[in-house]
Length: 581
Image (cartoon, rainbow, N blue to C red; front, side, top):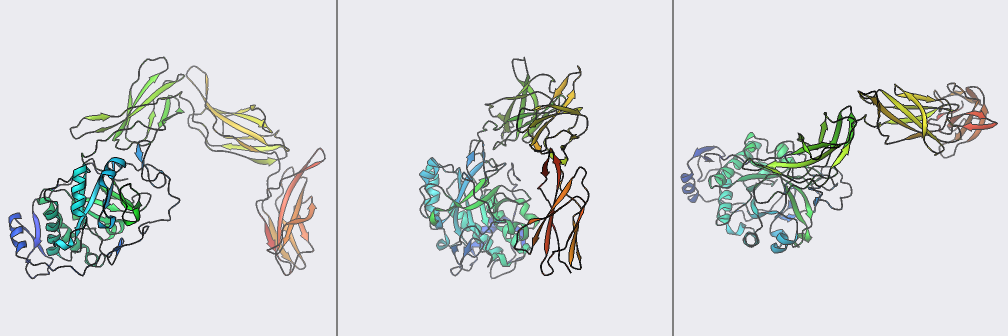
């Protein structure tokens, strides 16, 4: 997740159309701010009475059904999607939204009359972005709920910012839209920026990328000259394909992408994650509202660093222990403290930028105890450190084996194979037959073992423990986190072939050591089922009754004899087919 922890720089001048009166040119020049107001009051900007919003969210002025921005098929939404959970916000899959500091809504007249007191006091909403209007600076293009929303947010203490829906076709209209916003926000204290909403496909979207950047520059410069922070709102497609001019890097980006995560690869300050949020106190638009996450510490919310959750300590080799934990919302990093078995207090051990830490100086042969504290640096350069409500401990040692397999290898034989563990001096193998107690079986220096006395009638269960020798000559053994099992039977046949002959089909396969014979099953046609056909001691079979009109399918199962009992490997992993000529 990309995030920003700085404020955007302000431009020192404003760009305006070279000739405002009666001109449709998009050429611009730098002028003085006093000049801007005088020139504008002499300009008559065309009224947009017949305009209707048309974008990925609107069709002829009406809101479109939700879900239109998804970039992939969504799984079932997590029950607590978009809420604060275990010290961080989570997405629709229940995964942490890294870097998210606050949760907000953006609203307009479509959301009806909002009970802002309820939103402020009874929900987890931290801020709001209010639509003040759309298009040029005319009162009939003010948002019908703007004045009430702004007044109520001020009254109840809900931090808010502003956005305007843009129809601008040239820099004259961009300037008019800036004046539209400035007229409406006068007298209000904004906690968040003023955003230019660039999404209209029919009007602004019909321009070239450079022309859209010219419009944004005039609007943003005018807003910044008035002393406000400014940003650009658009969906992911627009930012990747239309808003590509380098000038857009000057302004904060508010990305709309209705998905489990925001996939924009540049910096951005806010993410609009869904249009189907539910917030108590907002009943308009069928009770659905846009939800957003803010990644910038703007000072309107006290950031509370929750203790880290799911802290784990595991051995990672000689004198090494690795720690893992979950991301804490608002954390810049994490301070790791340690004490060794027998010590009274924790002392600093290291600092982590992400959610893991490898202690390469852990004390061997003793328990090492750890606490992890999240922290961030405030605007005054002071470190703010969160709490720690849990400690964990571990001894250094080999890493437990993660990947291990067992498979039939022959008559009363099982092959075991596992991954190599760095720094391991060897491996201890334990076995249980039929689910009984595990007991020592063998010790190996490499990563394979053939059990030559495996049961062929019951399952053999295996655990493998890596170990290393410490400086005192003691064997330090890792734990075992998983087991595998198999019977000591013949492996499945390989090299299976079926050849069409005149009046028959010949089936052949590779010889299996220890096999006393092979059982052949056949299926005729696609809709039948496999049935016993024949038993042979060699490695081929000529089927003299094979069908000449339908395919004949064959499976071959090896077997061995044990005290008069036929032990068959029924795990045929392949079949072949052919039709008699």
